[in-house]
Image 1 (cartoon, rainbow over the protein chains, first blue to last red):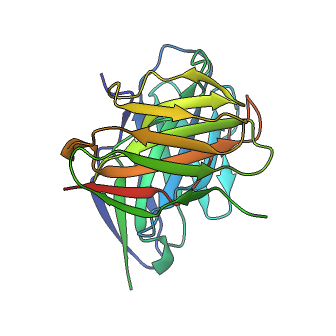
Image 2: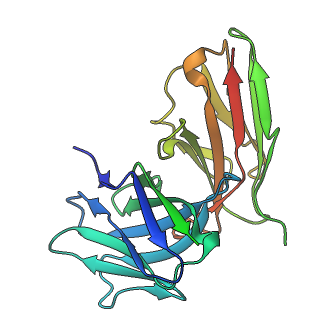
Length: 116
Length: 114
């Protein structure tokens, strides 16, 4: 089974509107972390936000917030007030604590396009 | 301060050639990761170093792939006898500590095998 699933290959959003990018995950490890990265056309992965499995509150970083629903195993990214510069690929990723290598497992990504 | 750098940024190789991809992590970062990103897909883990020790190489797709980090800083990913299916972007990431959760990524090396 896929560990990270992003069901939206592409999304359009009007500039200044909010958008939600979906992410569901699968793990049996009680301790894990969830990440969102942005990858613009230049190729570099830019860290956006992190949510730990034991965190009581949803993570927020500026215009980014993570809607963490543990029972549903979902970790959706919400971008408020979209800007043209938000157009990029967005990847959800997970790190499991029982993973000695600390590596990230990524989803397939969602391409976000912001319309002026 | 400088981020993670990778060189070359682009590499074209003929099938069967050997290639070497370099990663300079952020100074002082203990953990170093290599990922492979095929076109239109998310990155996939290749291998992980903690200082100079390669602790996990479970993601290396074949014995043609080899990585090293001899002095615990710069790392090299080597691919021998390249095949067309090796064409991808190779991303390097580093993390400050063993349990540091934020991985800082380099710009990647785009490898095209003809």
